[in-house]
Length: 299
Image 1 (cartoon, rainbow, N blue to C red):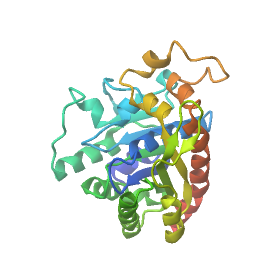
Image 2: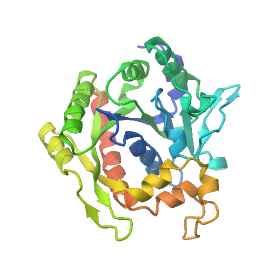
Image 3: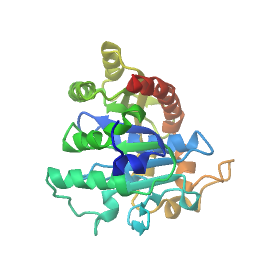
């Protein structure tokens, strides 16, 4: 029987850990991670969700959740996550971006320091009880991924992953390498998401296939993966996640009461995007596959 580590002690009350992967950069992996966290939060009135950003050299989750500039506070029980939903405390976030003096500061670290930072994130953050912990990783398969899986090894039965690609051949080739990595380390895959598949017209909502499309579903079929769905480029979503100011400043004045008044402004806005209408089906498929993935992890 394995002895309990500081990581397993900290994460013993986390039910499901979902690692978001991509074979290359620029495929929208972080925006998918942010949407996954928001969707998991939205699908249940009681779900507690954490999102951990271990893309140490390119942390973008704080900006996407409107949390740039928020400090991280220490408590007697460890680092306190920054909560995107304010005092509700059901959507916590942790990122190296919160630790930088300036947003534009670079993180120039060798492997051992990256490993130490990931270990500290896993063992020192006071997540509390979580239904889901979404982990946004760097593109490719690097030191961060190996460190992450090494520290999480005792929790293997609770871990699964999602792979993000775009329809282009070069992205699909790198996604295959990413899939090979998951198989090498026995990391269950909930499914594949094809991002940036077409473009949503902000005026009429029509989707135009300005790039190729369908490569993700073909890859999933060929590799025996679940295909979770396609997400077109949505300018409304880009504006929502790319704005630099805090969510309350951006949307506090113009959010209408449409039955979502109990939700925080960023989520209210997200639920009105065309991306949400697609992503809610994606997250439903992913959740349906979690039990099967965890059963596989226990076998």
